[in-house]
Length: 377
Image (cartoon, rainbow, N blue to C red; front, side):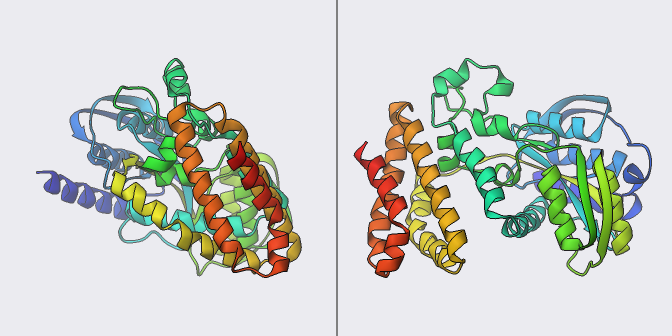
């Protein structure tokens, strides 16, 4: 029965994609009106798509059924309510394309493309921009008092990172323990797979301010994401140069300019996905992969110029010091887990340093000293 529903949902979405699509973008936003009883979340998303032309992609692991009514709701209000009912995370992004595809991408395909867009954007940031972005995330991590979190209202119970990522265009699921209390950020990161949480950018805005002359499309899209904090998936073959000046303008004005310059079209897209709890074996397997991944990351580090390496070392020291300061106030269980992670990092760095030249070891000395202080405390 479930498989039949999946086939029906895919068929409905494909037909809607071919027949409709851009009505919501071209004119006044269509509103959602529907009533469901025990309906699979995938089918509800398909009905929103049918009424508005906006794709709402659901990950394969999101298997909730919903009962309720949506009356004159915007697409975003509907998506947020859908995600809340499914106990899932959600996000809005944009697609810039030469033409609509014959079939919509699956949620997993969209997430893969969004990861590519995010990585490309991150590579173009300056050292100061990276420090500002990652420094905020590091200092926002909630290492733990789940009992205290349970005393907060539900909208505040998703951990410090969840609250930082809340806002227009996205939100993260509130993950709870078997006892019903919210999990800390630390436990969510270690024991759950939530790709949407990893892709949401903080401080998203519904307006954008841009000012550039004869800017290549790639740089213009990067500036858009930097200012608005929304990701844009752009077809690889699109090209063009933009001259544009916007001051606190709606996002649609910038997207219209991108589309006009590249002879393309744009559309919003939503992705909804439940966090997946990892088994103890999966958690252990991920930790076992740490050394291999770390060696690759350090290889990329040494290919950067000395000034940039110095900036990243400073950011690393800041992160270690923040973790050290905050884990001292964490509950015993979270503190033990965090100490285990930091000990693994320290042991790896000690072994890794034996492969380095004396000059390289000197360059990494501030990180080693920060790790040693954390271990001593």
